[in-house]
Image (cartoon, rainbow, N blue to C red):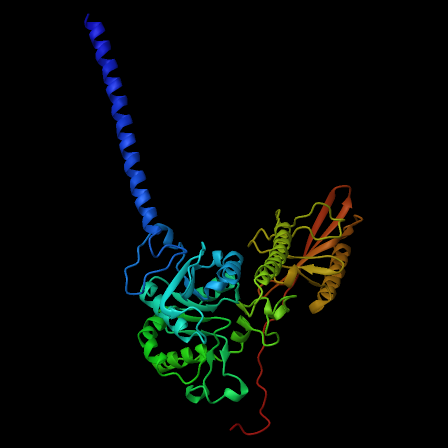
Length: 458
């Protein structure tokens, strides 16, 4: 009886445990689903992707999906609702998804739209207003008020530009973002506008087409003055007026370094668009390309740049493959067959671990040479090798070594201040039997002598 009771109690305990575990799992899962749906609903409130955004003064709901994994740069693309399905969509698919931070499209008020793109609606700004001075300035004010301390850099773009995101990441990571910076393609206006843009001492401004980059401290300092600058314009140009405002508040003007002309590439040849055929070699390392009026050329330009990157990486892989085979070492000298005519490997000095240069009939393979190879005629290496072989012949006669030795087509050499000019010569005297000789030619000691001056020293 006691045994049955204990068995029943144990069974009841297991049943209670299973029921409790199942009840807890269902309850926790229900709570999790409710919380997740609330969070998803928050993301779909005003301020979610593809819907009108709150004004800069309204609190913005924060969702995990809104927080970028990389906070290097916030990119604001100024566009219009009629271009969301064409230019904006092409930008986001071609390179926007790979931006090192966050990319958002800014439009003004107008008709309803449907899109899955990250869009922010600027209140009190007409979507079709031109010139877009107010839209540009309000976009920068939004960047500062909502994300002024969230990103290191801020970039203002038009919707007809292509950005090489890898080059942008590399460039911005090389600059100190804690200092004031105003970066872009320098411009001074058209010929008839020069001197009439209100710029102090005709200093250049950063042209808006290829993109304008501001550091965080610069944007935060300029943003409170943008409305005042908007009420004190000299021209209808948006980019030159932004340059006037930045110069007025911070004293900065766009850099005049010629390198930035190519980094932020502006084409003046085609008003309807550029870079529709190919890229010149000097343009392939640019950060941005403007203008690209036809959306399909966003993808073709991206393919061209990817092909260039692929060729570069394949070339680098080929060099690495050579280095791998070149650095295979085995004792003093490494070779499979002294009769081979190619340098497949290189010796490593057992004393200090230094790698030698491999020499065949035409070339010298060295880690210090571009592409690992230079001509044997360079720097008299052929003459040095001939002297080493002659010295080996004299040594064999002097030592009365009567073995019939045959020199390998490959030898090794190196130059160092301590050891001088050294050679390793490989010889073969029987089947699979080799002798290795090391030839060393030391440099003479350094001597000094005074040369009398021909005239009086002033």
